[in-house]
Length: 66
Image 1 (cartoon, rainbow, N blue to C red):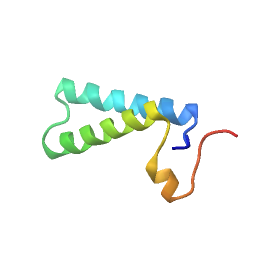
Image 2: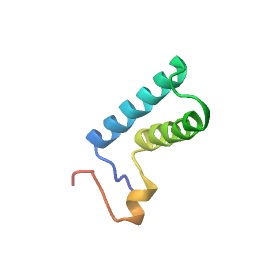
Image 3: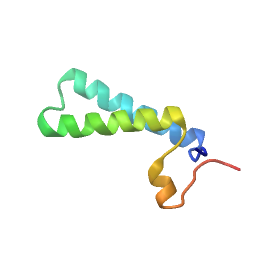
Image 4: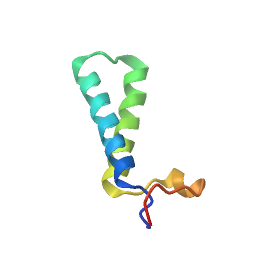
């Protein structure tokens, strides 16, 4: 698995995941939207920690500097 995410991309994803978690805990997000955004937050968190995004491979995109 080749890393394809740069540090800025990883930080932005972590911040978005954190924001979603805060909104979930505060009860601002509810219902189906909460579930969908919760899943997205988990995906963002995992991909930012690992540094690899499978969708980037499909579209041949990389944000990592060479």
